[in-house]
Image (cartoon, rainbow, N blue to C red; front, side):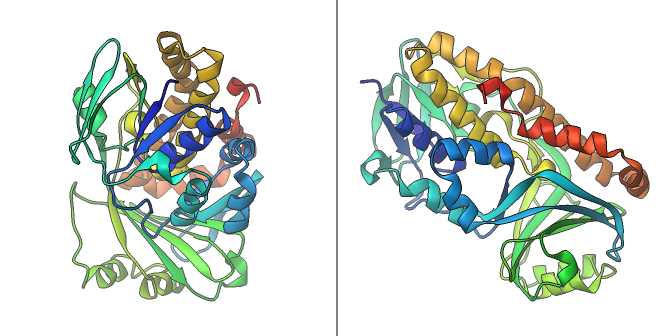
Length: 375
C-alpha cells in the first residue's frame, strides 16, 4: 500500500497524520527533534479549523483545553476603546503545546520517526529521494513537506521562493495574572504610532500577549535584559500592559515574515507542500495554523477521491486552496503595513472606528468559508 511520508511534526504535519488516519491511508511522519512539542505561546483556532477538527474527532478536546472569545477590541495606548466588535463565531485560544499534545494523542508511536532531520531531497518523476541526518535514505512515492517557513524541501525544490520580511519583530509571552473584568472573554489590540500590543485570555488566570514594532531583520534579545527593554519601549502604554510584561514567564522573539502571494506551484512530481512551507503568512489575522489544518484536511480528502493519482490530486489541491490562502496572505500583509507606517498608523484608529460592521463580518465569513470542501 502507498505510504505518505510527512516531513515535519508541527500543526500541519500532525493534522495531516490525523486526517490520513481517518481516511485509512498509510503514513509515516518524520520529525527532526528528539520529541514533538511546542514552545510557550498560544494559537487562535477559528471556526473553520474547529469544523475540520470536528470531522477528525478532535474539536472537543481542543475546546476543553482552550478558551473561547467572541469580543474583539481595538484600543489606544490608554486602553480607551476605538472599536468594539463581536464576532459571529467564537475563536478558541489554546496553548500550542496543548494543541500538539491533542494532535499527537491518536497517532501510533510507530508511525513517527524522531531525530530525523531531512538534509536532502531530490525529485524524480516516479519518486522523491529523501536523505535524513540519521543516515536514513528512502525513495518516497508520495511526500508531503510540512516543514515550516524555513522548509528545507522548498529551498531545495523551489529555491526561487524567498522569505519576505515585513521589517517588524514580534514578541510573544504568557503571564499569570488576575484578569480585570473588562478584559475577560476579549481579544484586545492596542495601536499607538508604529507599535502594537495584543492580549487575550487563555483561561481564567492566564494571558497570552504579543508585542509588535518596527525592527531590523535577524535581531536578537539579551535574555537578561529583554523584559526591561520591552518595558521601556511600551512605557507610555496602560499600566496593565506593563503588568503583563513585568510578570511574563517567557519572551519569544521572531521576525514578521511570509512567502508573499505570487503565483507558484505547490507541488513537483511526487512531492507536495503544506502550510507555512509553501504559503506562510504574517500573524496579523491569526490564520497560519488554521490554514495548515485546512490544507491537511483538503489533501487527505483528495487522496481517496483521486484514487492516489497525484498528477490530478496535487493540482486539484492547489486549485481548491489557493484563492483563500492568497486572500489571507495579502490581507494580513496589508494590515501589518498599515500599522507599520508612521502616517497610516496615526490615522488607523479613525479607519477602525468608522469601518462598517458589514466589512468586518465579510472578512470573518471569508476566513470561515469551507464551501470549497463541500461543508
